[in-house]
Image 1 (cartoon, rainbow, N blue to C red):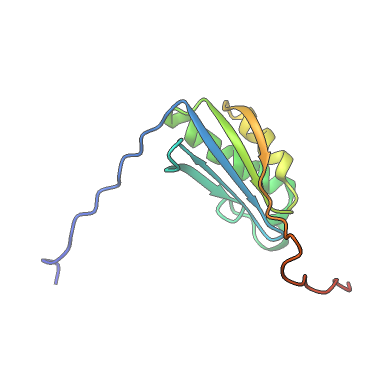
Image 2 (cartoon, one colour):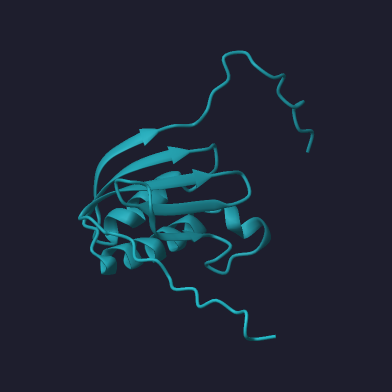
Length: 129
């Protein structure tokens, strides 16, 4: 049974001092990925991975904790500055950017890449709370 097992080695990702940070902020969670210029992920984190559950995942504090965790890993790997691409309507976008900057990675540019429809699909009806 164990004879057919393959040894899988973790692939080494080339880390440049300059990279890209992607922040995907939905209404339920926030995901931060730090990549090199080619798009290979160096470090990632999310509010759920940081230990937040339920409605606490979409708070600015959860975004700050997740971003600082990912920034620390990327800083240890050798990243020193990055361009930030923010996507989504969720809360905690600014606090995640601030946490990346406080983690030792200099933020050189911030760009919002939230997809906006040019009158495409009909949006869902308004919430009644």
